[in-house]
Length: 120
Image (cartoon, rainbow, N blue to C red; front, top):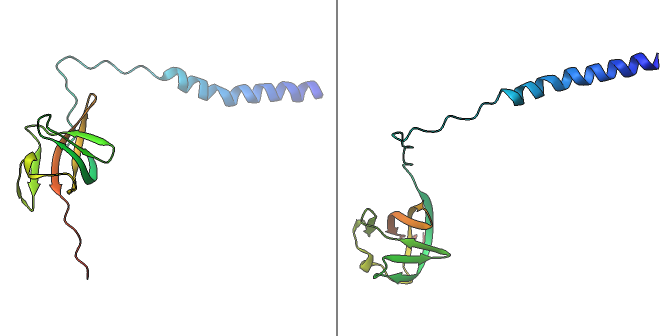
């Protein structure tokens, strides 16, 4: 009787494990993307906000917290709701915006001055 229970247990364990093993074997590797297919660009970047601690107009970079962000020709800068340039921003200004990673660079897509909330 003990041999039959042991044999039944082994068979039951094998039947339970079989579907998991067959599903793992069914996975096929994804086909490599063709050279002419390009992944669509993300519409939104990663958000940032804080006070500017450094502005380098020569290198077109700003530092906000731990982030060293690059300003490019595609960056949309606004200050008080109007178009602005990097020279319009200074250390100590509160800013917010979004950026995208491009290799080891963090490129700002949009940036605006963060307005202080009015006391009610």
